[in-house]
Length: 420
Image (cartoon, rainbow, N blue to C red; front, side, top):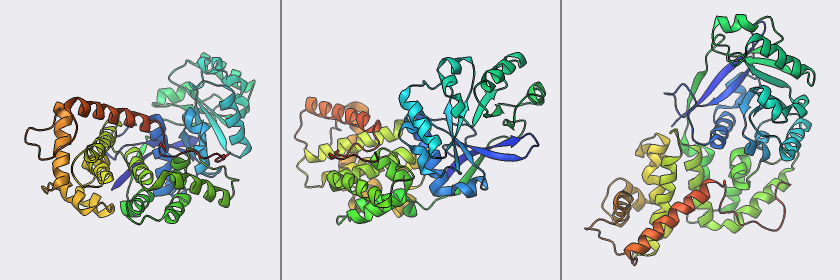
């Protein structure tokens, strides 16, 4: 599988690269970010940069700016990287309240640098002026303001902060001439260098996603092995616990927190979670529509199998539904998919159009998605009326909607405090 990340340099006044901004790219064939979920896009950028590319290798040791959503700031995603590796970019259009302020103060106290993006009059109205002193960098867009407006904005910042100023969107020589004599230490835009798409081949079986899935689907799944895989990977820890441990959280506490979450989930909860992180984090498309459909199909097949006369494990129906679309979601061949993930042989045969019992269930599900009825020549017997079948499918859609808003919907909260 090939994984792509965007990278655009930020230059100093003497035209030396000082840092890079990391950008979401679904695949090597696109030159701009296109995504349906901002949280998922940022998670993918951070995860791939750390786990697959290596941040130091990706930036040559220079710090990396990453655009964070409000939710990801509140759930400590920045703690996946060291303070010297990452600069937390806060969009200027984000609303400021006490929770956000507290988390930004915490990040600063932990040694992380903050950058305020898109500073303008509206940013000031959103109460960023009250905390602009927290930011190490402030960005202004050369194309959105004339020289007088830019000077006024710089003055407003300087009254409250000693932050280094970044002039962004410098696309042409005219843009540069407009502001080259102004108080900007850093510069970014096409005039200096366009974003580059960096692509790397990844062995799915050796990725953290592949290792956790393959362990979870084993009939003798070992929770201690799962714990070790999750603990070594910051993104898996983040998605399991719903937050990233603070840098000063000791390893024993982190291990115990992971154990307390895994045990109540049980094997089926772990298996469904492993499928969910594949769907949410290895998607080469520009929206979540196809992963959403795959999860719904998996839910539907597992429930239909449970309601049928077939003596098949219902969880295999869930895998069947997810993997029926996973090759397209991940942009890989079925051969590469089956080489990386250890799915049951009869499920694999059905996905390769071998006419076994699982194939018949999959055929019926595909027909139902198009016509809201099973095919007339269906060879399976389901103990459900047409009305109940429709209600069951609606339940699966609602369950998928619920799941998509939660990193780990199978976590049954225990009475202690995790990562507090």
